Image (tube, rainbow, N blue to C red; front, side, top):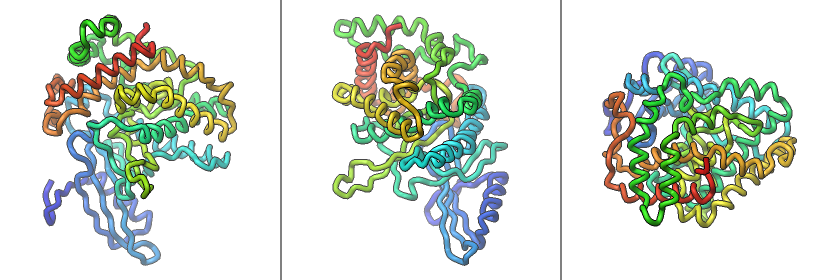
Length: 417
């Protein structure tokens, strides 16, 4: 990096720069100027280096234009590449953008859907040889990221639930109207993180050991005796339980978002009367997108991004709001929700598969409550430090959030194995 006029700049690789120039040539943009600057702060993104690309130039009609794009590239750290299937993650996200989203757009357009699922950035191009792709910069058109330390309120939750309802409805409609196509998409989107045969069971258990200790330390021996017993039973078989969620696929599985925490959601605020109430949401980071239970997105999102107080008041409403969105969109697509995904099936899926939300939440919430200078720099980490084993000055916040999470899992029957 270097600086121009006090602004940090970044450099694209020769390969990505070449693809960028090809894209501009195809759009017949000339006399252009390109500026590349950091596009995310520390703690905003963990599996990518984000660069903001600002372009000014002249279009084919001779008019001045400006383009604002984001480039997402894989981290260079070899330890990360060894532990995570970085190539697979970037190939998955590009597949979602290049293949699935255009298919969804066509499917919805053919059925004249007035309010389609389109809660994602516009894709520009990829250069998978260097694990990089470029998409529109949503912040340049008014979208913002929420403070990750603060739980979302109900208005933000409803927008996300609406988006997930529409996203999941597309899989149910395809299963009903073009089952062979959904089968193909499902085969191309298996889980590539939690059910990897090349990750030994003992290493997976070791990865979670520190997090399990934090969870148990947050519980109160006398008040939370039942929760402690159930959580300890889960700890004994955690890897098998999580892998079992992906082994037991059924007729209610969908192609989901996969990484449902608040930094992967941008919100837009257009209501002058209620400036804190969002009007739109956009979902980012589709690297973990996979075919699986709809409960995977719901439980990960709800338990990571809300607190016990909100769930105490609105949990049932959140689930009903999601289901209403799914049903409405499924009807618009020509499907029958009572036949394809009755509410009783959703409740069963939440009990069967919500445990993955717990698995993810107890790790992600710790990152969310941490100060920026506490989060380990993954570019400098070795293989043994990728488990994020550090103490935060905000451990009290973590303890409160996680204790509420465990008590709610017990209350809803999501830990009855």
